[in-house]
Image (cartoon, rainbow, N blue to C red; front, side, top):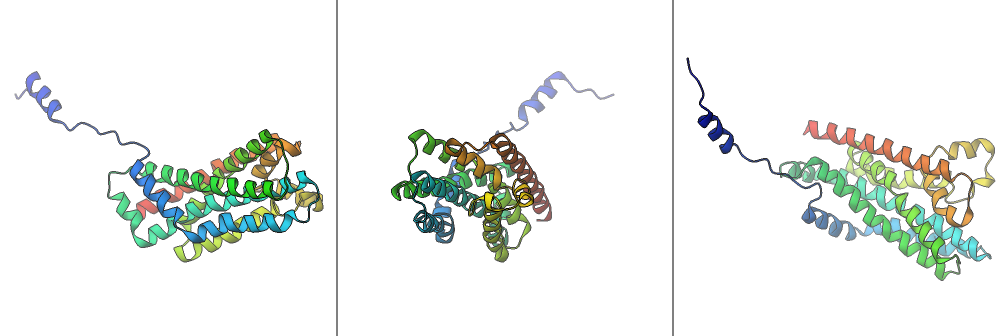
Length: 261
């Protein structure tokens, strides 16, 4: 009969490699992602330059200073949406180039890759919010400082669901089509969600449909500090629900993509 002495067991346990706790966010990887995104001129044009052009175009039709601010806030939400979604969708290019597979061969945790994508999306989303609201103020938009700050924060947080949506598109659609899908999709969602034109010009049925779209919640929350729309609670619920849905879709598509390669 063979027995294992306590001394031998202790030695085996001592020889076992210690588990290394890998951080959720790798600063080097995050820094590389941010530098790469800020060098992407096409993303900056569609998420920053285009909303600024819209503000310059539509603010002229407003005589009321608060109306000018209303226009600026709407397009700040739109710019944040586009920036976040485009950042996530860029993963399609990484998949096609083999960069995603190379990352999986490193000690980087899969969750860290997704978390870094979301963080870079939110960093980039802050850029159009700041620039567009500054242009809106320069065009004559007038609000109390607290309302500007609250609207900016809501517009920025409203980009969270679209980071997940962009990731889902990036894992689902080939690289050559991902940005076209995101660009057209964001414009359509912004139109239906009331960012380009007031929903009051639509019929009752269309307004109900608009309230079910992802852009509706962020737009209501961003305008609430000064427009005081009564649907702010429903807008917050819409934002949370769409964020969870898109996050779940992105996670499932990420796992499916990982299993293939």
